[in-house]
Image (cartoon, rainbow over the protein chains, first blue to last red):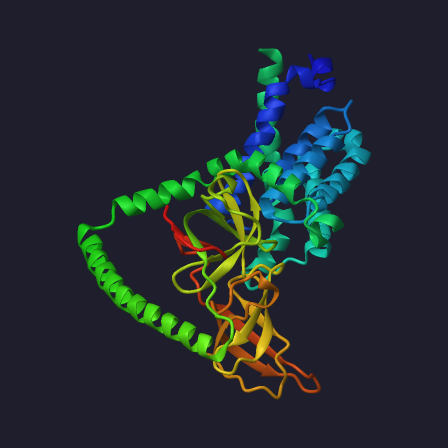
Length: 167
Length: 253
């Protein structure tokens, strides 16, 4: 059983894989278009980190590029700019994913928070976002929020993966 | 990235991507639609009656103003003929569109409208509401389009001060705030002055109210004022907007 989870293959969970990205993109767009919540980290990026640390035989760089393009389109930013940031953070995750997988959940959350911090710093330099009033604090709060969201996301996706693989 | 930022070379590819993610955006905007629908449904009939009365009065006033405007237009054209100069009136085609969703992230401010290339919308058309300039169309799909607001840092609008005719550039700084650039510190300017589009560059039509001056600072040793302005249009509250293009005629929703 353990061996099967460790050697997770896309064809075992293809629907979950695609639906999780779709759901994450919808939620991220919802935060922008319907709720105007600015301190939520991108669930899509967290989902990408999750699959990068679970599906080990793929680099996920193509997924990162395509998801980045989707965000460039949704946020009206220059095409390729989000892709660049998604690719960089995914590459950081790729470099340490085997060790990352072995860490306890709290430690994983802190690492995810640091990746999100890299994401925000890169966004800061590339987009020079207009941060007035509370927007400044919300912007730098995102890595902290990601630390709290990661355990929940991992729990949900782990459970769904388990159900999909063994049912 | 560079190509998309400085040129329109990838605009068709962007339109294709926008069309691809359009269903996602429609689903994402559903909670707001439902909230607005419920809010509208529970509006008291007295409020609706009062609004109806107000709109009828407004309609009457506008019709009267339109008659006056037609008379003035004919008079200006007649005077132009006498002087032998070209008419300043440029007829515009107007399309009424509804706002599907709006975004006010620190990265970009835009609205999504329910008119697209199938309705004859094209890139760079201007969008206005009843009060003033809202923005410019930057990407289109067959059934919707996206207009970047004038508060978006990517948008610069050539304007002039209505009172003095002094020209400058209006630049978005996000959060419903604008800054007016290149006004020499020797110019006559005061808080409350209205800024209207100057028509330079022929992207935005001439004479549309865009913003009012809210703050003026003199920078010692600097040749220009540091000026803040607020948009006149209801950028995030308008539900119906007008898309302008330089042709004649009016199309309704």
